[in-house]
Structure formats: C-alpha cells, structure tokens
Length: 210
Length: 98
Ligand SMILES: [Zn+2]
Image (cartoon, rainbow over all chains, first blue to last red):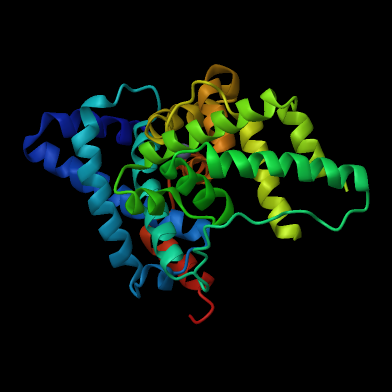
C-alpha cells in the first residue's frame, strides 16, 4: 500500500509535541485536498457557499474537520484506512453546509402543511381506486396518529425535500433525533398499512401501476 | 399530480424498507469508512454490515455522503488525492464563468 505515510499520522498525532504538530499540518493539507476533491466531484459551485476563493473555503472546512478529527482520534480503531476515516468528516461538513444553504436559497418557499392529493388521471380505474385507498389511509395516519414532531419531519422530508440538518435546526435538536422521529413515523405507517391488510409491497404496487 | 405520486412512492418505498431497529446517521457515519474500504477491497460489505446497508437505503443524505467517500477513497487507494493546484484547476474548469 502506498499509504503507509497517512497511516503513521495517527501514531504521530497521538504522540503530540513537535512531531504531533507536524502530523496535524500534514493531515490538514490532506483535508484541504479532500475538501477540494469533494467540491469537484459534487459539482458544487462556490457561489452555493457564498465564497469566491475555493482554497480559502477548503481551508475553512479542513480546519473545522481537523478539530473534530483530533477530538475523536481516540475512537479510531484501525478498521479502515485512516484517510477514509478522516475524509468522512470533511465530506459530512461540506455536504450539510451545502444542504443548509441550498435550502435557504430555494426559489419558492414550500411551507404548506397540508398534504397533497396524489392521484394521477387514471388509466386503470381499479389501480386508481387502490391508490386512493392507500393514500387515504396514509394521510389519515399522518394527520391523526403521528405526534406533531413526527408529522413535521415526515412531511418536511418527503413532501418538502427538507434536509435533515434543516429539520434539526427547526426542532432545535440533532440530526439523529430527527432520524429517530422519522423512523418512528415510518414504523407507525407500516403498522397501519399491515393492520388494514396491505403489505408494503402491495401498497407500493398500487402507485407503480399506471 | 405526477410529482406528488412520485413523492408518495418514495414514502412507501421507505416504509417498505423500515426495520424495527435501525442505526442513526451518527452510527452510519462511524461505520461507513469500514464499509467503503471493504467494498474497495472487493469484499461484500452489504452482507457484513446489513444495518448500514439498510440505513443507506432509507437515508438519501447518508447515501450521498457514502458515494462521495467511496470516490475519495478510490482516489486515495489509486495513489493519493490529486494535488491542491490540480484540484483548483479542475474546480476552475467546472465554473461556467471562469
Ligand atoms: Zn443518515
């Protein structure tokens, strides 16, 4: 493996002192390149971040990622390459910042709380009736059985395309807590479908038939 | 209302994939480097880490980051990320105004 250098970074970082400082500078440089590579591959524009200097933008993300990585260093178990373990942090930071900003800059606010009525003009009246029934059930559970927070994240996620990080900010909580709300909401909907005699596959098939 | 039907379909797909126990995004973020490296090593991480596979199927944001990480890890394994100047050049090339 050509990567022995990067793997030694962990030992040097943990050792601290001048050697640790040098290792932190090397890691920072790797993170700047990872940030730039991520911007390239996602095709993110600098404007999306309100930036005009790509190197400064990448330096900022690398600095923030480095602080997180140094804090979490003791949890690295060597089950992956150190670089893969480290790059996930900078990717996560950049992606969430992009989502946050993209949401703020979206062209039209979509703050309607009402659930839409999704029935295509029916080619097949039987399929249309089944769709109506499935959707009627789903919409009723969303309106009547979910908690207000579960409803807010489910509607936000599936009908407004709201990023998890934005939902977390709205609810003043963490992304993990938002995920848990979504998970509980999905479980509730799954149980409701089953209780009404629909397997998930049948419910889905109703929306796949034309 | 084709758009809305599409959204309902996505919701029903997510419901169909729902498990009683699921890992959250932080756990996904902790496991995803192992998944990516196992995948690049030619192993079958979907079988080794089914809970992570399931999370990636229902969480499109984690899926996006997993795909991005796989790309960087692939470059790293192939000899390292490109240098700073090369990446800056690629970025400039992508910008319509540059
Ligand atoms: Zn996730």
